Amino acid sequence: MRFFEERGLKERVFADRVLEVERSATLEYDAIAKRPGMINLTVGRPDFDTPSVIKEAAKKALDEGKVHYTPSNGIPELRKAIAEKLEVENNIPGLNEDNIIVSGGGKLIIYCIIMALAGKGDVVAIQNPTWVSYEAQIRLANAEVEWLTLKPEEGFIPGDEFMSQLEATDAKLFILNSPGNPTGAVIPEKRIKEMMDICLEKEIFVIADEVYEKLIYEGEHYSPASEYENVITVNAFSKTYSMTGWRLGYCAHPDREIIERIGIIHQQSLSCCTSFAQYGALAAFSADAKDASERFCKELKRRRDYVMDRIRKMDGVVCVKPGGAFYLFPYLGHVDDLELADELLEKGVGVVPGSAFGSQGRGCIRISYGSANLNLLSQAFDRIQDSGFRVHGSRLDI
Ligand SMILES: Cc1ncc(COP(=O)(O)O)c(C=O)c1O
Image (cartoon, rainbow, N blue to C red):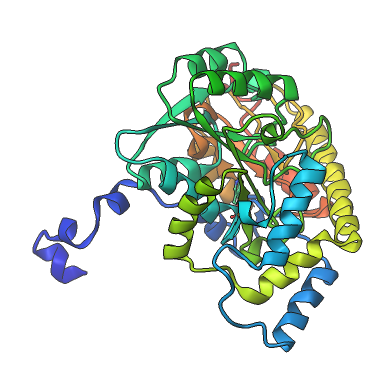
């Protein structure tokens, strides 16, 4: 690399897109928070093991020699099981195995969809704050991002300002994420329908990212694809079954052409997902796996209640109880959240600064209670409190 740098040829080596798009903030903070002695609350994953029924099914597939390429969109039995799940649990009509693509995690399938639907000159609207990768992926597709404002005092549920911005947008695509990362907010069905009505009227296509669908403690999940055709549903095995390392996610839409076009990007980049992992995922539809996932959800609710209790005892913090996912996203007022995250790192607690998720995340930090048990969470909050958290200090004036 020095050879090129010395000659001022850096631009020649890299494509503009990688010079413009930043590295994933959550993965960066996770890497730092892995240091010995740290309590790592950065990472967006549950700390449970994958249910054994799923692991056994993958091992069996390996033993049976299921080690080759599979059909690009996924093994038919898995796609069929996904289509049935979406019909029965999410009330999405018109799906069979030909309407599903299984790809490398929720992340890769969302990337494939964005690449297939948005390009130069297109605008894609996203919630502000939201998951870090949407913005990066939209920009990698050479499209533009439009941020729609969510507010801490509204519990990050789309309010009047958000709805007016949606009414006014020129976007061709909107990414809806509920339950949401980093906020944990579960958007009520009524509000999602109001948003969908606007999108339908304005001919905006929607990606409904439902990867936290099963991790809801209050409120109900609503899949807009149950009633609207302009929506591609995305889900993954990662969070529900603690399978983040398996890299399996999927999308669904009743229109075959949509699936075929997205499939081109998936085919030309990944070919197919790991064969034996797909056979493992098939067992996620068993009663044992469902029981395990319900146990995960109960444990996560206990943690959520605990961390909420601790945060409520801190003066001046705005944190509406999140109904789902496994994040707290407290707003601490006019603090520099990057500085605060660094200070907490020094005290031995890894969190992600809120501004990584959009400008409306300024003054917030994301605390992932999925990644640590109650004992560790209690120690982490002691450390946070010891640091003063600056909430009693002069920097806080909400
Ligand atoms: C909102 C959201 N969508 C998608 C993903 C991607 O999940 P996966 O691990 O399946 O790629 C994540 C992961 O953090 C997420 O938070």
